[in-house]
Image (cartoon, rainbow, N blue to C red; front, side, top):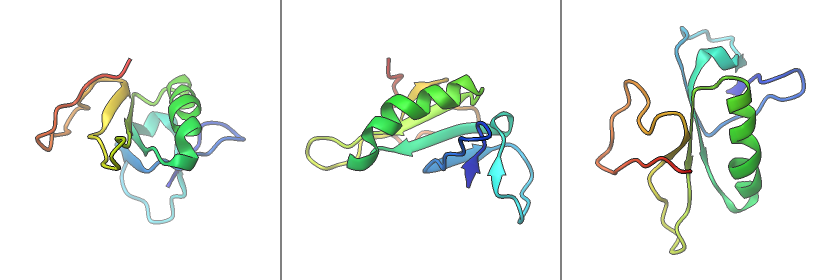
Length: 102
């Protein structure tokens, strides 16, 4: 599912949490409907996930952006907030600590 940020920008995040009712014909969300966007950084998406998308989502009013990075040993690190609160409302930790990335 995509998020319509502008007429020319409709990215599709890896994880999206919205606060609107389910509609089977929906093809995108508007920024004010989205509570949290998450990206899992891969080799080919590093620049986009680290530099481009956080700025675009924040500029359009998406309140929380989380990013999961890959450790040097190939394991995934727990998701961390890039902006917004480390734990979004109504989210529960899976036992891993969340930290704000600055």
